[in-house]
Length: 502
Image (cartoon, rainbow, N blue to C red; front, top):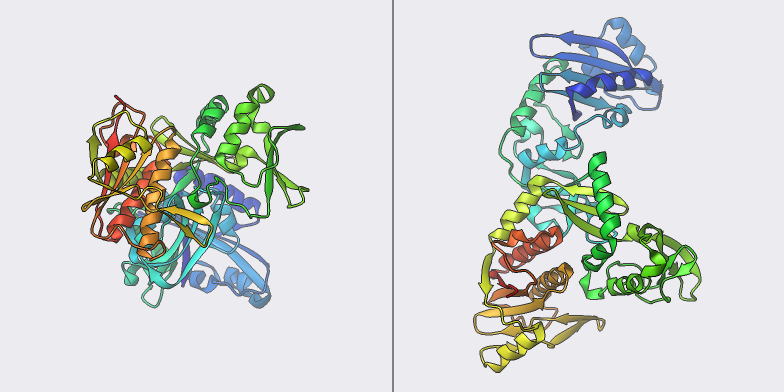
């Protein structure tokens, strides 16, 4: 038997039952005892699906059961079995009630439960959003089970997972988790409808257990006060945010948005051109257009549009610039992402997890020399201690330029970057991670990383840094965690060197 379980705060149950009744559902059976109150809501509509009603037969009179099951081959019964307990209520949904109950459910319930009862070695499928490009990974499926640690990409947040469970006798062999939790319970599932509260007891017990794996997640921001504050920040500092926007996760292309090569682009403000038509839509192109047209824009950033052209410079379509940008804001100690014209917030538990992972990387403060990246590389090479790899570039597919690293000695491979904006540091980390993976795959010739530590030397424009998580950029922290995973997976030691401003 399959059961799809939602959790609902008790103060929302009244609104749920009102909407059920407004949609033609009737409470056909209810029961109250010392443990809980339960109610079965049913509605019969024309369909070709037999359904699941026999499981609840004992709750119904013969007359009502006959009504819902006569001509069952041409009628479909939708229903919802509701269990109200002291703290929360649980709804077992069948048919179209899914679309009603999800309006009132605890949106975090399914993934919260997944973090406690899934088998980390048994991922079967995931749905996810990637917050480093304009792409959405609707479905990623695997022919063979995979580990969760191997399945997550940089900047990715999960909205659904299907995986094995840690106890197939209790939860079934595998389950689906999203807003709800869907179980396929076999022959060992002997609970009657009135005993389903025992199953919810197991759910509540599991939710109090220690998290086994933290899933990267986000939530749509719905608090009006928070939204107003974030929009005010965006309007006030839009230009600053653009100057600090993250580079693309496809950093090899050197662009911030990854579209078909068939497109050409320009920026407009209503009927006013802000730029010439360009073959690429990179962040420097956008920054330059905004900087050159401040008087024309006058703060009306929401009206800037990106015009897409074909190879003959004929207009294809347009998009608002702010629909294509991704901007991260730290506000009142939380991380928010403006993505496709919508504010979302990464889960606090996952932010904490990322911070803990990043702070476990070996981290050293190096004396500041007040040199630029190029000057520092030149002086270190001149000292005779390091071999220069800077400019030792490799081309992938004859198109993408890969710079292996900057310096190398017997112990370490070093990559150096000076910070003009936060995106520079993200670029460094992602460049290093890509080089590691390509080198291990044999894509860039000699693997210079073998047997050495991998050191990222950041020349930062700040005077103090106690720990790496003091960087208030989720993109940078997430990139550092990805870098650490890539290095450790190759049996290398990741290190971060920081030179502060004097």
